[in-house]
Length: 145
Image (cartoon, rainbow, N blue to C red; front, side, top):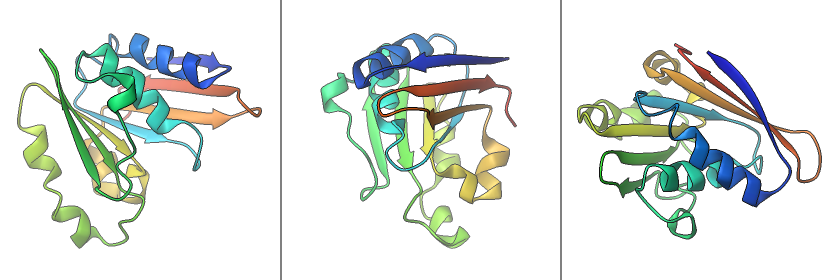
């Protein structure tokens, strides 16, 4: 399944994330693709809220910590940023497979396309494309692997 959405502001991107929590309910690993500043973390703010795992204002980029965890009533959200990783060995130290073991886990991975192993794990993909100063095209594909 592939669907396209459009957003004209950060607030609309957060709202779109809230709406995407429903279709993502049965996914385990979601790749988030887009240039720097495209709005990946902004979308995650809404997804985490949609799952009841965090308030949008509490969700921040995990660029330096690599993983942020948010625990909701039904799902645990792991927001992962692989931008700073360069070698597969660095990826191994994160223990992504361990995070996937829980039935409640949803991994939202930024820059996962850098590692073929992560691509194989994904079952959904969200691509954010900047098409104007504040306008974004968001493509959701479920069944991406």
